Structures are given as C-alpha cells and as structure tokens.
Amino acid sequence: MEMTKILVVDDEERMRKLVKDFLSIKGFRVLEAGNGEEAVEVFMQHRDIELIILDVMMPKMDGWEACKIIRDYSKVPIVMLTAKSEEKDELKGFELGIDEYITKPFSPKILVARVEAILRRLGNVEEDTLEAGGIIIDKTAHTVTIDGNNADLSFKEFELLSYFMENQGIALSREMILNHVWNYDYFGDARTIDTHVKKLRSKMGEKGDLIKTIWGMGYKFEV
Image: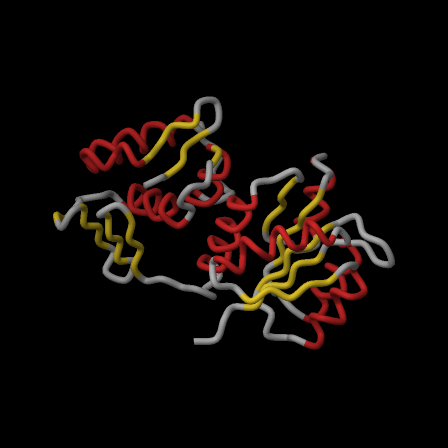
C-alpha cells in the first residue's frame, strides 16, 4: 500500500524536522519545503500530495501567496501553521480555502491527530468502521455496538459519537461540535450539546467515561 504523502512547509528546519518525525511515526511519507516558492515547485512535481502543512511567515513567498497559487490547481487539504492568532488572520485563511488553522506553539501530537481527522473526513483514509475502547461504529449500517451489545442511539447521538471517535484525543470546543454535528446553520444554544452528551454517556454505560469534559471548553474522547 502506497504511503500518504504530506508536504511540510516551514522556513525553520527544526520545525520541519519535528513535524516530519511525528508524521513519519504514523506512517506518512513527508516531503519538505523551506519557503512558499519551493512549496509550489514541490507540489507541482508531486501532484499526488494529499495534504499540505503550510507556515504563513516565510521568505521569498509567504504562506498566503503559496496557498492562493496551489488553490488555482488543486483542492488538496491545507493546514495553515502560524504564530498569528487574530480572528482576521483566521478568516483570511478560511477565505483562501484552508481546512485547518493551527497557532504556534502547538502540540505535534495534536497536529498529527488533526491531520488524520482531515484525511478521514475527506476520504483519503476513509473508514466505514470506527473502533476504539470496545466501541464499534458501522457507518454504512448506521449501527453502534459497545462490548458486543447494540446501542440504541438517536441520529444526533450517532453523529456525535462518530465525531468524537474520528477526533480521538483532541479537545473539541462546543462551537466546533456544533459546526460539525449540527452544521454551521444551527443558531441554538450551545448547551444543547451538554444535554446530548449526557444522554449519550448514559446509553454508553461505563464507556460513557471515555467522553471527558474539558471544563470551560467542551469535550474530548479518549481511550
């Protein structure tokens, strides 16, 4: 099976090596570029690259410009890596069509987890079945079993548990959960998530403890 190619673009060699090491451990093949110009060149030479991790502030050509050029040719997933954390910068990134925005400093493990989640979501490592901690989700049959026993979940509970398991180990804010499970057109109270999580935990029995509460933020599914 051919390894998934990921392009890591950053003018700091130390940062590239750090990200490359963590991605390589997970079985990804990593290509590198030290600036925007080089990133575009590498991408044009390797059109089978399946995801790009792109720094913003770089010499010769910054990440914004590189993203614009690449977007003219491809919808490849792009994770923007930057020291900027202002809302206008994040909005600019999403307007350019990036898929994720991660602010430095960051946890390499979280970065890798988000990369895997994006690839799963976009079908690059599509899984019809999710399995963790004795819980098995069959997306095709729309069924959930917990330690071999069927769990009777509502549609939203099923979607919620699927989203948690797809993002294992990642702290998810209530806003993120609303956006992905209830979609962006939902304007209700974010506390509806707490109600659904409470019901979901109850139906999961002892396995409900795998859904951890991150106080003041949201939740995290962790085995």
